[in-house]
Length: 222
Image 1 (cartoon, rainbow, N blue to C red):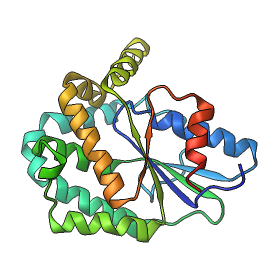
Image 2 (cartoon, rainbow, N blue to C red; image 1 turned 90 degrees about the vertical axis):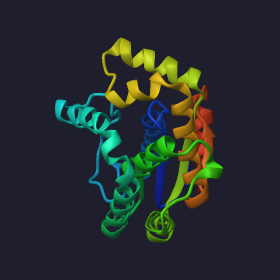
Image 3 (cartoon, rainbow, N blue to C red; image 1 turned 90 degrees about the horizontal axis):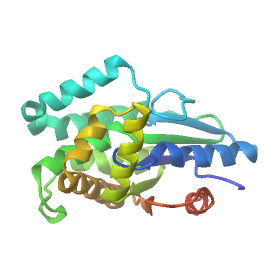
């Protein structure tokens, strides 16, 4: 592995395998002596060495539960909130002095897809407010990010959900995405649309890829 893009964003819905994808790339970079700084949830986030997001604090789980409980109240304004979060994030973004910054997931993008999945049935029906459209169009010019968007089948999601249940690490979003297959597939489809439309994202179907094949897909981005 000779090089990586300066900024790499890995996005996907719950249980899509974002952490595993990041770990495969981070291990390969470490082996080859390439500096890779991991951040989580935002371009401007602090460095984060955690290899998994499964073990969440009680506070984080409580916030997830509250978010879902009052979803009908804030859903109409959620796209606008996401747009403001994106603007704030890219305004504060500072790449590392050297090497690559790898952003594992992006909270605002995921929440935007989540909101759209509750308001529209088809990609063709989506109408984004001007503020949201403009914020999305600023991401690539402001960060130079190359983006990977992970796609999985619902059967894969169900199997990974069962694995987390056995480990006792299910969170509220995991459960929510597992309850309604049609809704979860719609949210995932809308996240894919956001990634490919606004971020020129590369799609990776992450159902049963081995580590070597997954790494090869990731290295093709440079």
